[in-house]
Image (cartoon, rainbow, N blue to C red; front, side, top):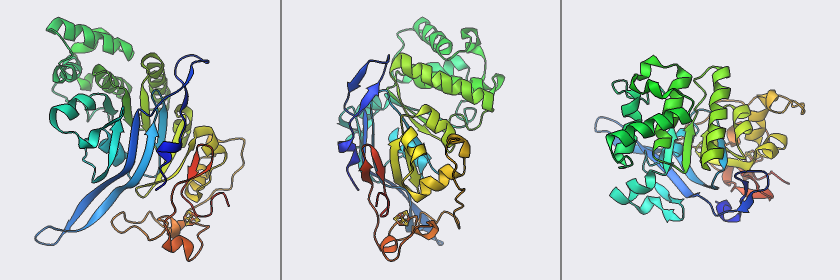
Length: 346
Ligand code: SF4
């Protein structure tokens, strides 16, 4: 796969319109694979592997929001979980601030992992119902030794609740006493407690009402401005991803098929799969009249992915034999616009 991470120049606006600067990647993912053994038969022997994430490379710059879209089951969540090491990669490496996290173990890994946090789609199931909000957030402080005393812990929890727009007096309540949006704010406060630099946001607004979604998106953007946070923002809603992200990656069957600046991706998608995704949500680009592209068939099994280009059984443009035999690599077609398609840019 093309080493696109080496080719991307990071021009960012972190604070203020004129504060452009060039930065090295905060996170660099190289050839990441997460495969799960699939057991069959009476003895549960591994009969194959489910290739949830298969040779994925990308970077995230400090303070950047990188969007990740794709149909459910394409490997988005598995990728996010591998980044924060809730899952162990099968192969490849994850570099954070220039250090190889995949080569670390124990105390060393735990100390670095603090800088990478995750917020989840279902804020309720990710909060322990038996703990008060003070203890849910305080637990994260305790694990990393970030509170000097009980008083300091309570003060920090109060500050965090206020930072996410909640009343500090609610620290002694339990998760079930809050609405879905408030619970997501608590999840964000817990992630912020350990002073991360990157947060993997896994479908953080999909379970919320539309009006609450906007509030959470605004909160994430405000926190990014205040704290210089970077996000990997995973979602299936292209309109939300386009709104919040500087660049967007599109994933299909465990692999990246396109990566571009958000506006460019919506305006001029190069991969047939991205074109189909965008055609299904015309409101993301109301200025462009697109014909709806309906893809035939279902997403194939990641246990036995198709040969050549994994998208070829559903691709309206597939060329034989090329697309059936040769796997396309992610190529840079124009500055910062990459696509994995033999025909793209021709
Ligand atoms: Fe379609 Fe071929 Fe491009 Fe794959 S490589 S997306 S099958 S045209």
